[in-house]
Amino acid sequence: MIKLGENSYGKNAVQLSKIIRHPDHHEFRQITVNVSLKGDFETAHTLGDNTKILPTDTQKNTVYALAKEHFTTSIEAFALHLAEHFVHTQQQVATATVEIAETAWSRITPHAYISGGAEKRTTQVIYNAATTTITSGITDLLILKTTDSGFEHFIKDPYTTLKETSDRIFATQCEASWIYKGAIKDYSVLFDNIRATLLATFAGHNSLSVQQTLFAMGEAVLETYPAVKEITLKMPNKHHVLFNLEQFGMSNQNEVFIATDEPYGYIVGTVIRE
Ligand SMILES: O=c1[nH]c(=O)c2[nH]c(=O)[nH]c2[nH]1
Image (tube, rainbow, N blue to C red; front, side, top):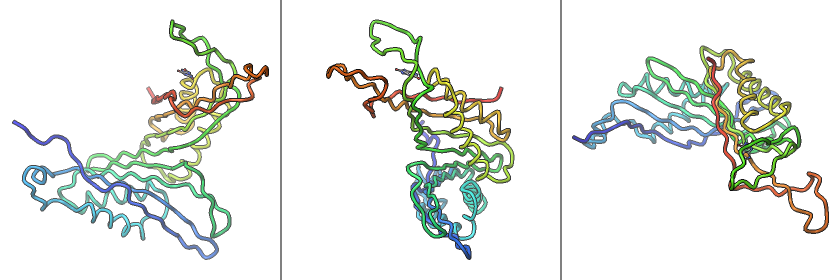
């Protein structure tokens, strides 16, 4: 007997920009939205019966239509509103997942902005009748420190060539995501504070490894913010390798490096409360 397993459908990468017009300044917001629905879609797959299918094109239109009134504060609030809309208006939809990534724009004047780089603020809201799970985070947080980072006392086997170092560059394109528990008054204030804690901990940590710094960053967030249940950090090690200047009869006192994109170390960890 063959039957349909887990399935979902929705619209990905809906691009939406919004101007919120205040008398003396504008707020500009740019987001990418993914919608994914789970529910009673078996006959759509097995019989080609579309009578329970809300087209993904309609889902996309709904994102724009609801943005007018309901994308006024945080991406979390908007994602929650969208997810509730699909579950409450479509009987066959049991669970709606809405993911939003917001592009960073920094203000220049009341009406002009400069790119905040590749960094994005993210959220994922999973909503059904029983539970709401809100996970928020950051992607492409490019951070680097030029000291207070080493890597020593690791395993040496016949294939080891890496030299121990007590002073290296630590660079990463950090991705962080944390799960909230309970109701949150202001997601944006909390986001700004958690981001600041992550950055301050990265900068201030005397790092014996990426793993240790990852844990310290997660630990600092859990210690400071009771509303955070757990946090996952993904930290690719963007190596800057000391360049051999001896071949030119010159010394290199940790000054000249070659940045290598690939391969890269990839350190991932979740920090939880016991
Ligand atoms: O902080 C590090 N952790 C590792 O596991 C590792 N492995 C490696 O080659 N360099 C590093 N650095």
